[in-house]
Length: 278
Image 1 (cartoon, one colour):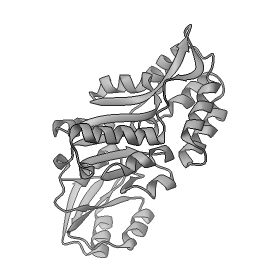
Image 2 (cartoon, one colour):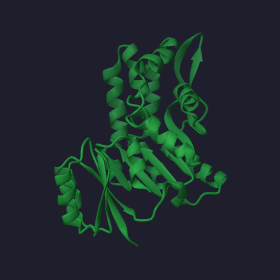
Image 3 (cartoon, helix red, strand yellow):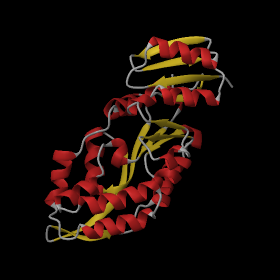
Image 4 (spheres, rainbow, N blue to C red):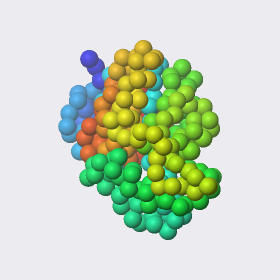
């Protein structure tokens, strides 16, 4: 199988393209814009990883003839992947306890503690918070990740299904589903009584195994093979979901996640996905 090398960053100059083309023995160079290029028929080698790291570029060895239209489903994590914030951390900020909650979040994303335990502890600390805080976070603090809207718009025009699979709150995933026209959205439901969060959840937790199971169920429902699925995530609780996809992308992710992913985006936006395939 022949491979192309796709390089991406905030900016890719001609000198960088030429240097990497020589390093990998590329037969052809194609600029994809100011921030990306495709080098054709390359020799795969570990030197590329080190060279791109030194240049602050993302790299991906992709099959030369692979097309985005050959996929059937894109599955995404929400917090710090599709959006730039951790919603529960922002809710904690409104309760004056962001530092404590954010540290629990970081521990879970690194894989230091179990996600279900992390979520239970964080949500418990939100007990008594006015439910209007959910709306405030959505309207005032939530922002889409760079390139998110462009990426989703493009894959939808190609007929791919889109799914948001999150360990966060349904309040946010439901609104993002409507806003972006996503096909599916799954998350956890916080319990609210008398207009305030109780610090408990409704129903079973959507944890790391649960996220993988949701993706596997969607694969079966849509009749897709693993190689027809792309998954994106950033935390340790995404690793099992990423493993259920034929192509996985670690987006601004912890090292433990990057070690398990097909590709890593540390510099490109989510629309960097569009540069990987013809």
